[in-house]
Structures are given as C-alpha cells and as structure tokens.
Length: 118
Image 1 (tube, helix red, strand yellow):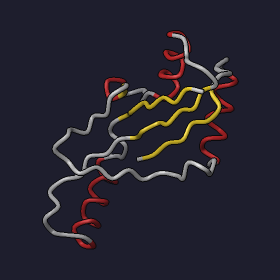
Image 2 (image 1 turned 90 degrees about the vertical axis):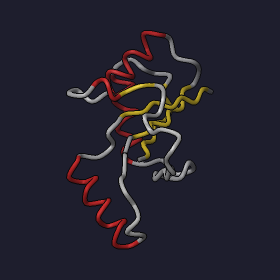
Image 3 (image 1 turned 45 degrees about the vertical axis):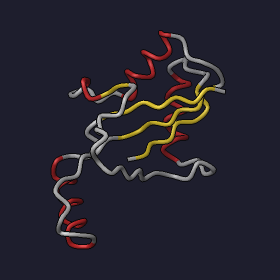
Image 4 (image 1 turned 180 degrees about the vertical axis):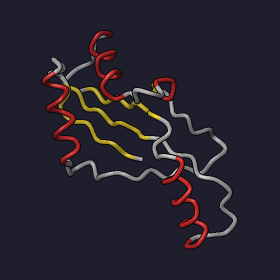
C-alpha cells in the first residue's frame, strides 16, 4: 500500500477566503492578519504509481485554469500556523467514492481511496 499527498492552491476562492478570515477575526482574534488555503489530496494506492499513472492522476486533480498551483509540495510556508480540516481517516466520504470511481474509469485501478482536506 502506498500513501501519496498532492496539493492544490488556492483551496478556496478569494471571496470564501475573505469570509473565512472575517469569521475568524470575529470568533477567534482580531489579530489574525491573513488566511492562505490549499487542498491536500490524501491518496491511498494498492502499490506505487508509475509516471504515467501519476500524470493521469495529476491531470484529474489539477485546477484547469491554475495548473501551476498543483504539486507534490505544500504551498504554505513554514512561517504560518497550519490547521488542516478534513474527514477522519476511518470514514470514507461520498467525495472519495466518486473520486475513486472516476480514477477507475480512467484506468487508475491502483487507487483505493482519495480524501480531500483543506
């Protein structure tokens, strides 16, 4: 079994990021200066993926209009506090079921599970 992490930034639109920032300032602290977001795709595969399989998976997960925001490394720098929000690892979401079905339809049969966190 192989576990792979892929990242896509931004995780939220500017409007949703701004709304989240305003809510955080009201509920947590007015000292919060900014919020940066990204999606983390936690991928469980039956075995390691070939270069072609990895490229196909990246094509499925990458944002069409911002492909440069996708990669193997997080875009969040080390000077920030990071809070990851996502499903529990022992619970498979409907999003994961759909994503795995799409992967299998594209010939990526090694993919067992994909969960997306923010």
